[in-house]
Length: 153
Ligand code: COA
Image 1 (cartoon, protein in one colour):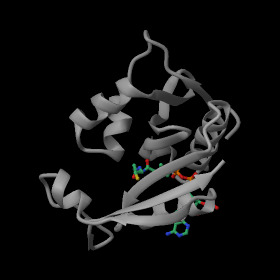
Image 2 (image 1 turned 90 degrees about the horizontal axis):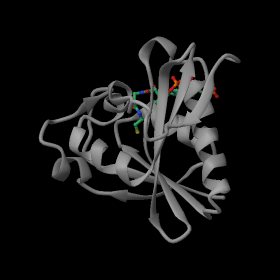
Image 3 (image 1 turned 180 degrees about the horizontal axis):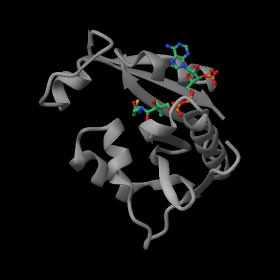
């Protein structure tokens, strides 16, 4: 899609909570990382249709902590475009490593991250059991562990 504009949100821009909540059910977690990091959104005709957030976690290391595309726009390459934009942003920030984590049950997200060049580096066992009150089931699989992926920039 060539009419999509990706830009970093400024202080006066509205945080696209409705999008960020598609990737993370915890509003507390979203508020925490949005204020610690940079939030970027994809717009079509001035309407936010996708968003991502990157934060600095360690020296020279950034993490993509949220990425979402509104349902009507999925499967058109916008998720991939946002990840490639996050990689560019991280390179501009002179980071050396970009990390991301996703659920063991998030099959299409695992495919997408690996198609964009991320490699699996570990498993944060029981992450979702420890940090989320509600049981999460996706693709008929209980989401309990966080698969950690990383990319050298
Ligand atoms: N096997 C192989 N590839 C798969 C796949 C599967 N099961 N499911 C998806 N993919 C691939 C697609 O084929 C495509 O790759 P391609 O361009 O090489 O064909 C890619 O993954 C998806 O592409 P894209 O259209 O760019 O993604 P999207 O715009 O639909 O956005 C999400 C993807 C994950 C951002 C979107 O589905 C979303 O917002 N989901 C809800 C929030 C969420 O889960 N966020 C991530 C939290 S970890």
